[in-house]
Image 1 (cartoon, rainbow, N blue to C red):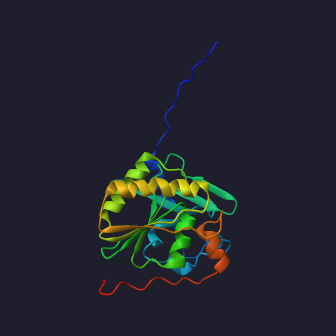
Image 2 (image 1 turned 90 degrees about the vertical axis):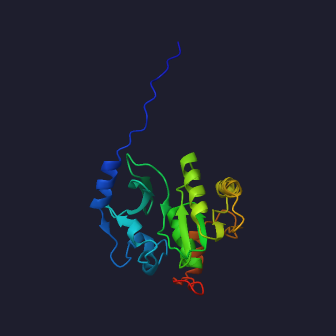
Length: 221
């Protein structure tokens, strides 16, 4: 006899997620043992206005990366620490995204929060806005990225995914999203770590570069 089990929807509790987020402490001067140490992410980058309000620390000292929805605020958060990766119970995955500025001329898409921050430290963030998707992507996230592409004033969309099969699949997916948006004033760039199997944090840790943001565009203000 075959039995059909009831399918229970995933329980969402955004109010509880937001309460937990607000109960976390803010980074102090960009200091976090895991992010600054094993991940080599500079405190100066974590203190940058692009990212400062989007990262907190929970009671277990996990770094928390906010996933935001325009109409609701924080709806979920990624958690990361040595040997641990998680996502907020009851939350919804959208994207870990930087703040935006009117003079931005690039949108960088990355696979994870750590990879996104690493790319920003390697190549600068002064005129770039960033989004990371936390691995596997949903149709909602694809729609979110398309909206971000539509709102970019001009310049480049940069696909900066990992150099592996999953990264290549994401590159193909968002290349198609870029083509679907169809904005002739935007160009598409694909940036991949040069060694197979590597992500941008691998590159950062191998180079051990200090944080060096891109200079502002001429006339930007």
